[in-house]
Image 1 (cartoon, rainbow, N blue to C red):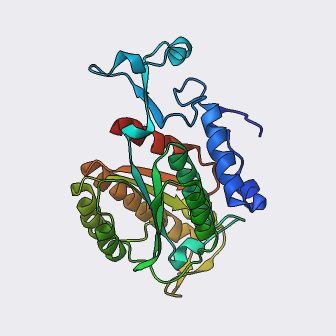
Image 2 (image 1 turned 30 degrees about the vertical axis):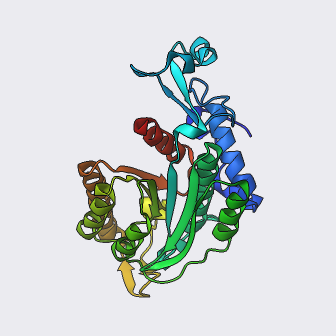
Length: 300
């Protein structure tokens, strides 16, 4: 893998789409990312322990890793498998809008890569990972486990996912919240075509039950840039409704609505201490993994 800079050290998503092996994609992305963290305590960690975290007053000094201190000039302690039994629940939107793609990688493909990478990373840290797909209701579920065999079960399930019905994130989440009976890390991957106030109410329910919630907002480059120069007819993938697009009139209105929607999501997430990350399916997964690791660092 060629690294040109820290901000572009992963393989282009369209290159990943040609690999066609989800296990290899997950391993390539995660291990490439971890290797790229030159000054991070995660660099070079082994499966003998779950993770590192920064030393805090009251920690046992015997757990300080002096090799890491020699590399970073900072104190970090090891958290062993017995210290953590975190569960990662990945909630993946499979509504019809997730099939959209202006390139070789659809939003669902990108979400699949992300879910596989997060599951690989979590299970490498000896955490249990599970997967729930949804549209307006729960479509399928793989309960969280930690075994190596379970990881292949997750990958097989991800590979078999297809887009289904209409989006109703709030309705689906209200049902899914009751399936998560203990505090957990809940990762929600979607294009979030949903009324923000309705969604925020549901997110608060997850949050007040003690879950660490992370939202990955997956959008295609066309949705973010709207590059059409000619008069066009756009079709809603879920309702089949048609809309006329006239660049000199429609483009500014579109960007205004998009900005309002994204800022509204960010604001609601900030209000309830939920992490939010906007992802462009044309870009590598670097930001997503940074977000996940930063959330884990805050938890311990």
